[in-house]
Amino acid sequence: MNQPTLPLNLPVVAPKFGVAEWAEASVNIGTGCSHNCRYCYACGNALWRNQIPSRADWTTERLKSHLPKAKKYSGRVMFPTTHDISPFYLEAAVATLRGLLEQGNQVLIVSKPHLVCIQRLCQEFDKFKSQILFRFSIGSLNESLAAFWEPGAPRIPERVECLKFAHAAGFATSVSMEPMLAGTDDAIDTFVALEPYVTDKIWLGKMNKVSQRVDQRDPEVRRRCIQIGKLQCDSEVCRLVETLQGHPKLEWKESITEVIAKGLEASLR
Ligand code: SF4
Image 1 (cartoon, helix red, strand yellow):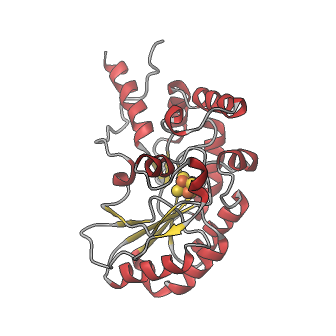
Image 2 (cartoon, rainbow, N blue to C red; image 1 turned 90 degrees about the horizontal axis):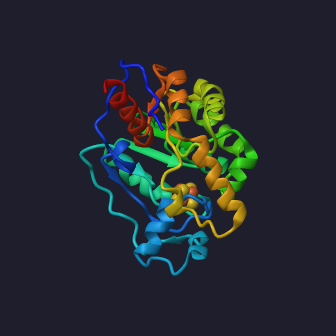
């Protein structure tokens, strides 16, 4: 198949992966996540490191025996990266964030957010506003898609309400649309709807490593995985790039810049 071609004025971005695309350091306080996303990379890592005995155990949330000692990091700190700020983790998250903020760190708070948690964080850390950037994960506005891929996470309207709440409270806000839960048209609709409540960036990325991360023993799950592969194929990603490229609040994750680079190479041949 010919590679799709792209306009030559697109930037070529030096590759960075995962957390490194967003922060210089990461802090976590537990193992397990009740959100139970089917594509969760952290669950796979926990299994590989023998931190949990089986995938089914991932939804049991456990705090570490000691919270991380607060210190000043040389760059932005992302919290959390291997679980979420669920109601179970909330109090420990508040204590951990307070330590990070009092040390003068810039903190990126990433979550599929619960309203009760975001209201608490906004109230608790009002005076640290200039050090906080919220990033809420909303891969689609389609509730049935989110319910399938992220069965334990807050429903989409609650996540959107969190974004609006933090924005109205004067915090810096951003969105992660990685993974996108559908194809180009859904991603564009989601981007356009959320953009007014974002002061920073909306990051778009494909659903990565589906064959490794998603348990596909159920035929319906297998069907959905094949479907998302088609919806996020290179030609569809190029259509997305051509539509949104240049928007001041847009950032592409590595899974998309990789497709852009392939398209550029093909254009130069
Ligand atoms: S919210 Fe994050 S850590 Fe929790 S299950 Fe989903 S992908 Fe994994």
